[in-house]
Image (cartoon, rainbow, N blue to C red; front, side):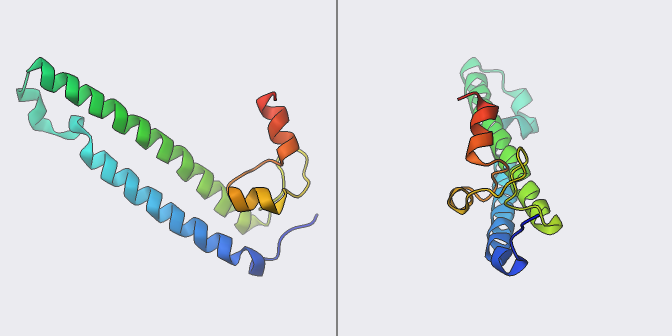
Length: 120
């Protein structure tokens, strides 16, 4: 099996570690902003306040969900680097195009297998 030497992957590793820290920090910040975490909100029964809180909660929940998905992708990429499988397509086992990895270092599939998976 062909694999990238760790020396080449070192900058990718560091980039992904920084991205992981950034995502964790952003997720924690959003969790603190969630109006549903404020215990005093139960005392305020105004409909307009409740609607605004619902809207903010929905927005923050969606952002947290997206960040969580990205965090998982980053952690998986770091694990693939660690075990020597980074850049190898999960579908066909061939090397993923380096241009594709440069655009998104967390991709798990080559373009051909990704198209098969998405049905396009």
